[in-house]
Image (cartoon, rainbow, N blue to C red; front, top):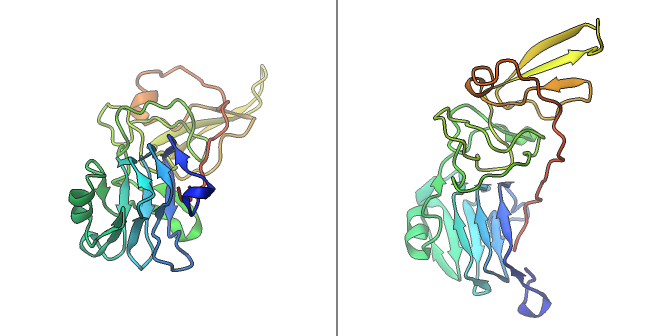
Length: 239
């Protein structure tokens, strides 16, 4: 929202599945999420990774009836050195913030294990705590930041749950490229992990980055077309 009640308020909005990494570049101790004038909104399924200041969240009294949950939080100093301000009250640990604010009860504090955050690659590595960390009730049918399906079984427990953050982890995908006309030559290959950063090219038949057991066993002869829906992205910012 605005910096003051007189210049506008965010109301009944959702901030979902974003990756916020070291946003406080000016060092103002405002954290990765700064809630100013906002009400009746939800913050869910995001990854927040602080700078070395260890400040993750800042909000004052303009923060009214907002709900935070199913997020992954991380700061280099660890959970007991992290800094939080909720409705003008300060907390110096993750558990203290949870207990004092009543927020993020099903969230976790852990290193999200990005592939190469400093190089701009925010895909998740195997074993990331952000895998399947989203709200089980969220069942989106859209695409992630790289253009892959948003709902996959990343931890192979046979339950489809979104990952926290802007990138969905996948174990393997199948790409087929070449000349698809009768008599044409085609080639196929595996796309392993979630490291591919762009959607399929127009000349590719793409089976999606679904976990191998979901695609190869359940639909062994299915060939899907390229993803048709544009990736919806959110620029991390403040309420």
